[in-house]
Each structure stands twice: as C-alpha cells, then as structure tokens.
Length: 135
Image (cartoon, rainbow, N blue to C red; front, side):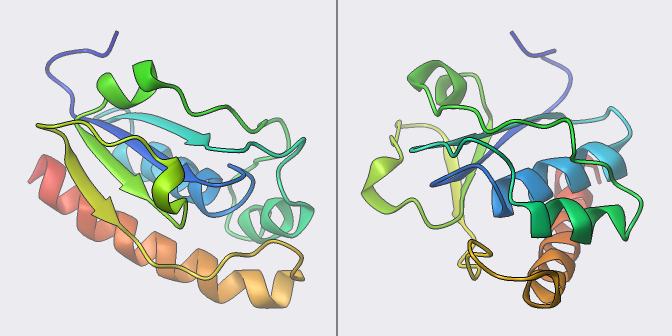
C-alpha cells in the first residue's frame, strides 16, 4: 500500500533488467522519498544487466543488489503513473491510470558504451517527470 500523500510510479519493461531498473533507481535517488517507486517486467530476467549495473555505478547509483521482479496486476493497480518501456501488449492496462510510454532503446546484450546514452536519456526524463509530479 502506498502513502496516499505521495505519488506512486511503476516502471515496466520486458525483462526488468535494464531500462526500468535505471528509471526506478534515478527516480528513487532524485525524489529523496517524495515518490513511491517500483519497477517490474512482463518476463523478468534472472539478473540485472551487468552493463546497466556498471553504467549506473558510474553516476553513483548501486544496482548490484537489485533483482528483476514480475509485473503483477496488483503492482499496476497500486500505482498512480505507469511508465512502459517496450513491453507492448504484455503490459496490463487499467482504466483511470495514467500511462506514459517511453520509447527507449533496449540495453539487453549491449556493452556499457551503448548503455550510457540510454542511461542519460532516462535520467533526463526522470528529472522532467519529477518536476511534474512534485512541482
């Protein structure tokens, strides 16, 4: 159950091993507790992409202990905003929820050099989202 005074955001991608993990980590970091944050995947991987862990470590965020989580109906229902990142029809849609689709390149199978621009784009979008959510 989320704190009703805080907006809640759910980031969803297929494997919950890259984009959604980075987005959740950035929002958690930048909101400093002002936003409830969760991420999940429609087909979660076994582990977070090592190149993603490395790219995030470069900006001072440790994802080494994170694990991909399965997307559930309950997670979607508990969120005020659902941001999808390439899960297509695998993501459940509920009336009354605010949905955003961030069309971002998938870092799966790519090295850290390819992940950095994806990371930076996500951080930029997170800053805009945070301004919108918290004023």
